[in-house]
Image 1 (cartoon, one colour):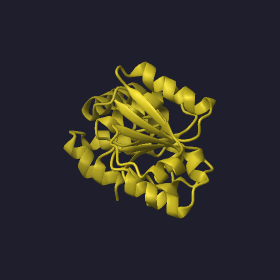
Image 2 (cartoon, helix red, strand yellow):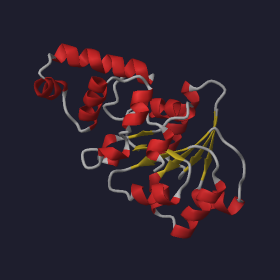
Image 3 (tube, helix red, strand yellow):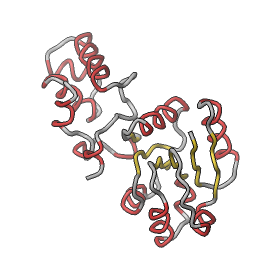
Image 4 (cartoon, rainbow, N blue to C red):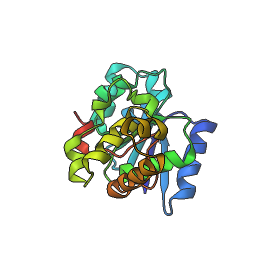
Length: 208
């Protein structure tokens, strides 16, 4: 895997790069400053581009537009909750993921895996699903993945932030039954763990 990391050279960035290189064999990560990357007018192709939201926060609108023109590979944005991440989504093409910069290592690596498999990922707090779950919920897609009506109902409630207990009460089913349904959802969507922080999404769903 050849990855591009756009951000500043600091302990945080070097730590992220070290995590990638130690978990993916034959991988290399190129660290570049955003302004310098734009000046170089680079057209190199990477498996994935990882962009630090802190560096984006100081870039001008023109720089973001030019950055988008130079990138033709999937992008993962590392942001903080108080950053204007929606602006980044509007101005940068090929964004396949928006996650919290200070997330757990396992979640970060899973995000990369999902993106490399052609999927999309995000942090719950970033997309504020409780306010607009329509951004990620696509009934037609989940039905095509083999989810039953009940499973889609449970998935939708989970996306709204409901716990197993809350779902069991609302559906008059035991928590054990709800857990079994969630296991089936994971299996059908090809995910190892239920997305408490992220969910794999269909391309047409998040590109709207």
